[in-house]
Length: 457
Image (cartoon, rainbow, N blue to C red):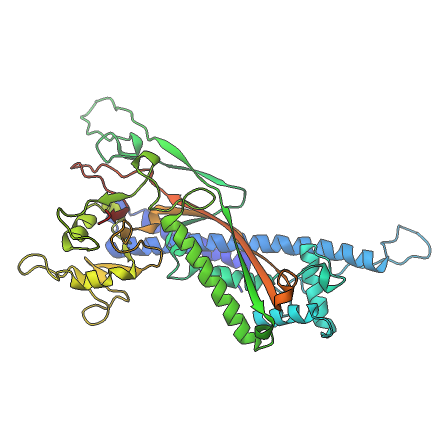
């Protein structure tokens, strides 16, 4: 695992590469633009890792101080005063597991089975296992005298592994967003107040003029709005049966890790699309123009049959996608739309180009493509015929704030009479679109947005 200094050096190298490309301005080629975007994403990811590593380092210092205090309290010893007769100095050493993020457990399953053994009457555990579990109990301040006094925190590396899977995997919607690390209760940022690309309205009021020699310059200024990301707590409680705990630790680790990673990804992804914005992120489908909805909703065709998607729907949706959001945009759809996509006319006009290209066969994209853009099926897209069954979006125009990593703990008592152990996971995340509303284009009147949907049919 890389040290904090190594992560900082990696970030500095990547940031300088991004700065070099950015300095070229409008001279950037498509390949260089994509390379710049990848570098920025990597820098943001490293920022998150550095913040987490710094938090873990601080937690280690806190554990060291707490363990020193606990050792002195347990032995009744204290440091001798200068020249005090009859007492010897007590040397405080580093806690045995302080620098081990796994706290000596070989796998996550190994930790889970040890928790069960420690809480089950009549079962004995090795002294070193008990020492490691007591170390974790001391971190959380839980009682450790008997099994009834409390549970144990999950070793930090296993919590981080689950978070990395949920927050950074390629098929995670959270990983596709413009992600920020929040260290306090909230993060307030200046956002672009632009609502129109017309001259004099770009960036809320910036305007550039052609001037003749000796002319006086005309001043202009941008307008900003404040955007606040206030991470909201998301909690999950997983019950694991004693029977499963008695099986292979490897199988147990796979089961719990897979369940947690999948459900975190699902819950956050659903919030990015459908979140109410009250106690959770604000989804791209939330609100109306009167309540600062960012999306553009394209009207259905005159006389269009219910629960259908036709080529003209797709073409009009693409026309309303913000030009600057096209690179990196994707189609998201409910799997119930698949028959409609397959039945859609494969060409527009005589000799036209394909509109929908199915996966495999004609296409090398994993989920097929629509007007050349990749497609991804999502469970949280609306049912066929409702707004949101087909969405055209660039999620880099959606900002998310994540606060630290996952906080976790365990208990055998919540479901004691069911022979189950409970594992609890809590973390905080928030999100909202960067834009408050669709934008009026420089030429024309039809508004554009990085998020486009189709009216209910």
